[in-house]
Image 1 (tube, rainbow, N blue to C red):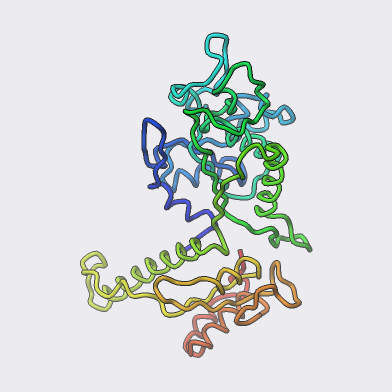
Image 2: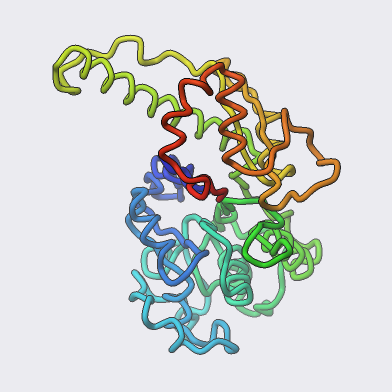
Length: 348
């Protein structure tokens, strides 16, 4: 079982997005996703159940002037046609109207799946969407008010038909992460800090504070999602074990006792600010107890950690041995451990 920081986004496909005329599950609406290489984030979003996915490459390829310092040719290999044209005022229609949502590209939610690779382009496009009228790309709040009002202004009051700010979701608050470089590198948390600074500078107090949701460690919701997946995995193991013991197929068994909680979970991580803080602070609605294990093979490399773990070890191999020993299983598990190489235990 493999869970990434953005995996909980899959649960949001059933969330509803409401306009003045429609209420639909987010899976059926148009979302903007970014982060990672190429269009990998789009592919992952599709795998989660989102049907209409736009990435920054689609937008800059369709409208190169949106960020004149980038070459659209660099994005053409993974760009796709937009589902609707970008709004552009005309003499006959100088201001956006509620009907513009049906005719023009409208983003109903923004998801940052991974660390953005082009901070400048992504910052500009996110800003355009969040400052638009209800996610209609190409509009500003003033596009929907008086046509004589300068388009660069940011009025404090919204037009009567203007929609709320487009929902914005980040998947990982980590400021730093460990890589092959000898020192930690900037992570998605740095992009969040950067974007918040740009938002404050551009809006200059004329707009409400940016509304956004950060999932990923150390948030309670992320640990609840992980525990739910652990319970599902446990139920699958129980079914297979019972089926093997009884000599029947897995699907022939009635569910019995599979809803039991997990008594103990060991949270292993290399970042005190996210892994250890999250594990220490998590309050399981099912009553499971969490021990935290800090490894020295990543972001943390010594000293007094900001959040105290249950134990500090050198790497994930020692973390597994420590957990097995604490549970009294180390002796029985040594035979299986001998089949593995220490390099099989690596931290994400």
